[in-house]
Image: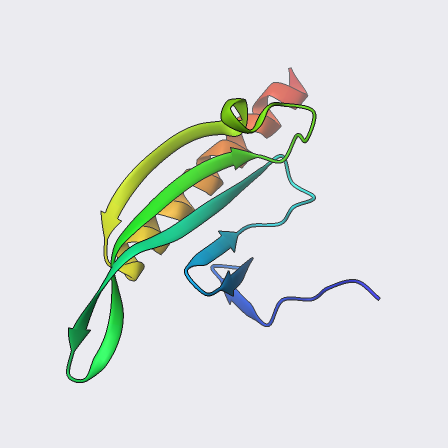
Length: 101
């Protein structure tokens, strides 16, 4: 039985384990890796503050360093997720354009 993630954001799977998250489908050429670098307390809750966002190739033949296409640090989880969605959407669209050519 295949793994089916419970969370989705803008139609793509979102998987979290502690301070790390993957956004996207690993059967696609690109996914986004996010790591919570720091948190802050707000109204008694611990919320992500700084989040590193990396666009990664799913090509396992590449060296780990070569798989990173873009990276950035965002303030807050919503900003990081929104940025990740844009990065992933553009990368997948560019991949489709290259495949058609």
